[in-house]
Image (cartoon, rainbow, N blue to C red; front, side, top):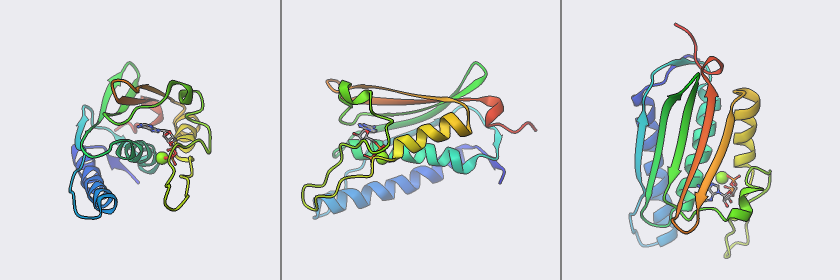
Length: 169
Ligand SMILES: Nc1ncnc2c1ncn2[C@@H]1O[C@H](COP(=O)(O)OP(=O)(O)O)[C@@H](O)[C@H]1O
Ligand SMILES: [Mg+2]
């Protein structure tokens, strides 16, 4: 499938996340406290790609993790810009942040800090390893993360060489 990566694409994406947040806040609060993070999507370039699904899978996993990291109100920024011969995608949030010890195992399959004390269920911890595999193997790009527990922010950066994602017109 050919996709023109456009503002419209981001807007459709954000609409589905707002619903997800509303659902989450309703479930956890139980009595209808409708708090959602504030989303900002900034897309500097437009280009054609046939890699719609791998790209969506990467952004989707990162954004859902950001939503999970925010309790109540907060901010999530998803943006895209050029960096040399690559496209840089960033997902930044004002959530809980990541412990520095956890940074070493962040992309390991199975690593998760999400645990539901009521049901005893742990999250799969598969998302970031899946994301890294797509970025490394499919796009032959790179992914990195920075985070501050004290200042409560996290930033994931995905760098994809233009020639590995863009279709020339
Ligand atoms: N934006 C984020 N803010 C804080 N912690 C994060 C963020 N993204 C990922 N993490 C941490 O990385 C872990 C692994 O993420 P992931 O592989 O997606 O698995 P899961 O979401 O099932 O826990 C999470 O449990 C969480 O501890
Ligand atoms: Mg996840």
